Image (cartoon, rainbow, N blue to C red; front, top):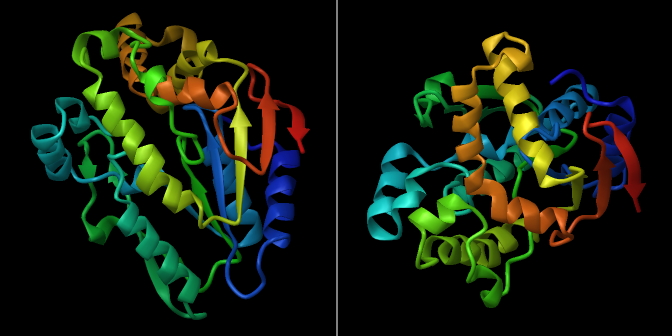
Length: 266
């Protein structure tokens, strides 16, 4: 993934400075898979003494998602879409960081993506003291819920074959309109890293995987690329909606295919 662009790190710094003075500002860095939001949030946290938390750190446990799969829709066993995060845990974490004293330690959850479950608390990260800000990187925060008619037609093979009646996407949309909208309403600022189009997301996600495997992107096995192509279908509807303007953000950074900033609005 490389390093965060210095202009964007400076931008986050200005957003922190413009936030409230009586508590750590709460700032979301949002964008499609592979857009660099976690890299940016981590770089800014290190530079400005902030706490960085990825929404990926607070997925529901495997057992909780299996229960959702039985009770609501089988697709909820797959982590990622709205409804599969523990927002109550994240709220509690924000509250504890905001109230922390100089010597207090706050445990930050961590998720084992290979094992598809939350690591036990003994393996969680520790943040010492009160952060200058709390930076949450999250692919879906700030998205505006779809209108009912927009949910009728599937956007990809996943929805067509595994959600033929639309019940999963309607349930996801209800989470967007309810708990996720309520959660993001408490933020001081939202920074949106806007990809040039959905077509780059697979390349970006494949580059991430290649980096993890220690190979060049062109050497990533085709079977792995096909697997990732299927995986991003869980994110496609919401990602396309955000790229089309269906996102509430205070600042939007338009990126090129190489994740370099083109324009910053406003």
